[in-house]
Amino acid sequence: MNRPVILVAIKGLGIGGAEKLIAESARFWDRSRFDYRVVYA
Image 1: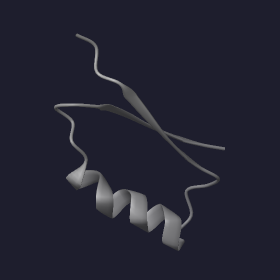
Image 2: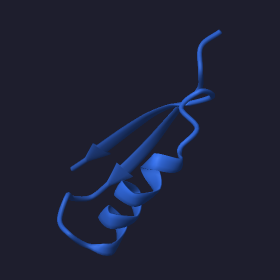
Image 3: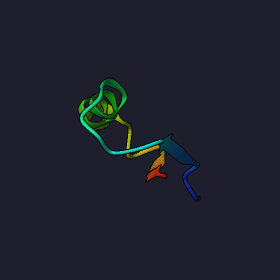
Image 4: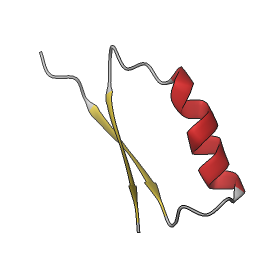
């Protein structure tokens, strides 16, 4: 069975609060149930 994909989109990869939140929370993502993709523009 394919796992659902969760897309995390961010405007940039600077050192701001949102970028830090994604980096720090990624270790808690449930990779056994979901596939995660992070994109930036």
